[in-house]
Length: 155
Ligand SMILES: [Zn+2]
Image 1 (cartoon, rainbow, N blue to C red):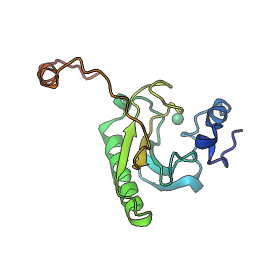
Image 2: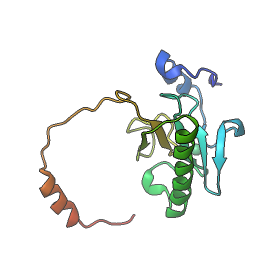
Image 3: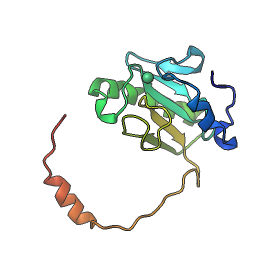
Image 4: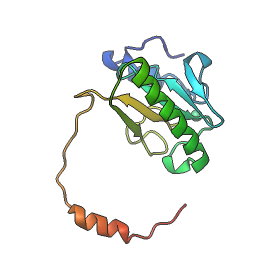
């Protein structure tokens, strides 16, 4: 059983150990005491292992992983809880700027530590994450034209 009381795990480096010991989907087994609000399809919860004070999560109730696996109905429910989370942080913690982050992958790629899809509500502060500026190989005007003309399928 992981130690859920170690909320300093991100900073002290024990977070990786904690998640290798879970053995099940922690977001399918959320405890009510961590939930701030819920609706038909999703919950707004605290992050037990926060990056920063006010770090919240919006989690679909059904186990889905990739962004493209989330239905428009569930996404709408997640959006409503995201709005609530932002308003609560603004009103209760006086947090002004917030980043939203959803890692689109199925499984544990793209930096996920829990495969169950989740939207991260991250209070913004200068230096919370470091950008890694890359060489630009596609001029933006060409990218716009290419994507405008692209054919995509919905599956
Ligand atoms: Zn799950």
